[in-house]
Image 1 (tube, rainbow, N blue to C red):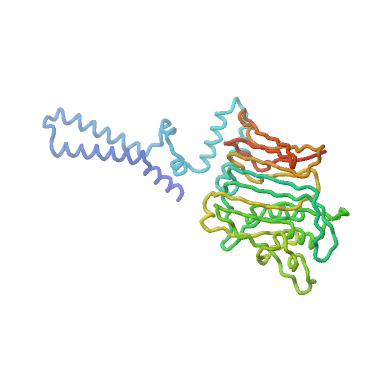
Image 2: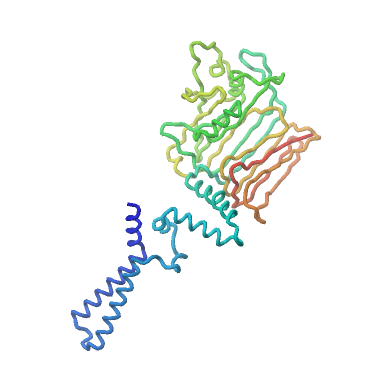
Length: 394
């Protein structure tokens, strides 16, 4: 059926339709001259009819012949998809790469096709993998403490981080009556679980320790994260209603679990809640939302504000797990920084090596905070795995 369809499309393409029109017109004119016996002089009429027959034959042959090489430069993408099988287009792409490369570099040409062209084309079929004009800003308030647990005297020492991302993106497709969410993960393995889940559009690893350097239990971790984290999402100009995911305690569990702490009055504890699904993981806390249906079909502006605690370290990593197209900028502002410390930024932007592809950096030292930013400029393309490492060594 595929071959028959290609033959049909070939015979009905624009060039074939024009050729059929010319052939039909020539035959019709030939018939008119024959019936009318015009011109009356046969010595004049016969050459004209012969010319019309030749014209009709030539035009008709153009219907069945392949496109001439001179027409290749005028072919549109829709015609190429309709007329040329996928495997032939792939072979043509390889040949074009070889034609543009210098000398015989078969291995290099193969890498260009398989490691550059193919992944980018695949991403075009999954638009959720590509984000445009990403702006990611971070504010860090150093050396904070939290000790307001319901049934524990534990003290958590942390840095308070506030992040704000703005971009234009297509939200990944999910099932009907499902939610998207932002998540905090207690462990790296839990973080990887969220990376694999299309419903999760932003996630952070939030590992917390007590004042003795011991990692918090899952129950204390959830209680601290509920109290310390806040989430806000705006999709296409509409502020989303955020619901915190909880799991109702089982009968064999003691009262006062992290998900049902009755006296929490801070952070996301004030949000409405929704029951967790079958994939509940005590090392993951999710904030769910459901955009309007019309905002799931096109690329729309998306803004995500996510505030969370991090371990008291002198560095913060920003990591992008998708293609970033257009202008990408990352900035960090650190408060309560030591007078002897300097805020640094080591960007690892994976992109083509071009003379005009230069990062734009800016550093501002103020009395209250230090800020450093880096941007790619317009019309850039960053590969997944790009990001920036901010540090403030003394």
